[in-house]
Amino acid sequence: MMEQNDDAYLDQTLIGGLEPGPISVVDYDERWALRFHHTAERVRQALDGHALDVEHIGSTSVPGLAAKPIVDMLVTVDDVTDETAYLPALESIGFVLRVREPGHRMLRTPEQDVHLHVYEPTDAEVKNLLDLRDWLRIDEGDRELYAKTKRQLATQRWSDMNHYAEAKTEVVLEILDRARAWRAGTSSSAR
Image 1 (spheres, one colour):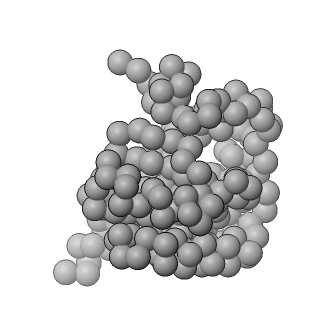
Image 2 (cartoon, rainbow, N blue to C red):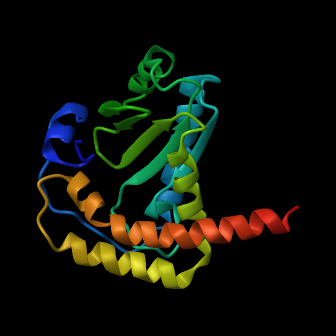
């Protein structure tokens, strides 16, 4: 079985191959939210009803959290494999396909300052991304733990950003466990 971020898997799913380079983690910037809102509006207009939801995700969506200065966006569509329903429209507003893997596509701007992740709404990763974001927005301790981890890992050299992301997995899963417990508690108290 191939690991999702080993080089053989990445060679199959990355369009354009591995991209070595330094990882830059910077202090939170309020302009990230503005970049999201501006880009989200362009995405919604381009997709003309094909986007079921557009969300700001990742570290740039969490006020006060240090992050790579790349705005991550989540777009849900009915069928990720039906690329004709969304890919040409996103390409027409400047996005370039970077990742094609089962259940997920990732496009980015030529400036590489926005990453757009496309999933179907029932994909488990959608819930994970939103739970993690929402938890980090309210829990200062985990926000600090995540920032510290990212800053430490950013000091290393990586053959691709995906390897950096993989190195964060243990901490992300630890935080995600707390996020899921929190979400389960808020869901049960809302009933």
